[in-house]
Image 1: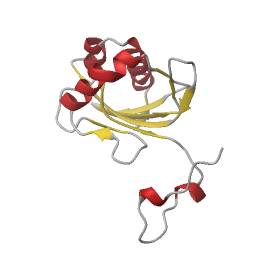
Image 2: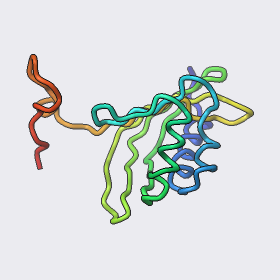
Image 3: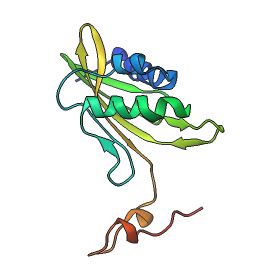
Amino acid sequence: MDQSTEVALAIEAFYERFSSGDSARFAAGIADCSGVSVIGSGPGEGHGNRAEWLEVYAGGIAELGITLRGTAPTGYAEGDLGFGTDTPSFVLPDGSTLPTRLSAVLRAEDGEWKVVHLHFSVGVPDEQAIVSAGGGEEEQGPAEE
């Protein structure tokens, strides 16, 4: 794969679409194919298809006023497939931020790079993330402050 400015710019465009609060604009940046998904960092957090993701965006995220601010996305592409990474932050209406890590898969569709899959994660030290044998997520210790 070769480094791709176009894929990096498409990730930045996704941030702008997400931050716009406009459901139609957001939807225009999501690929129209099977396998579209997003995974968040919380247990069970994510959406496994395009319709569900768009519904959740329109029904809550857009109205909450949450925005997404990137840093310097990198992009790579080969043919119609690309991927990228970044360390964006969700910005809440009160100005507080949630720093994340992002990996993204994109596909060229109708002459434009569109999101197929996103994975957001919130970095925590391994010591906090480890679950004891036989334990579940509910047994994880509280986050250190």
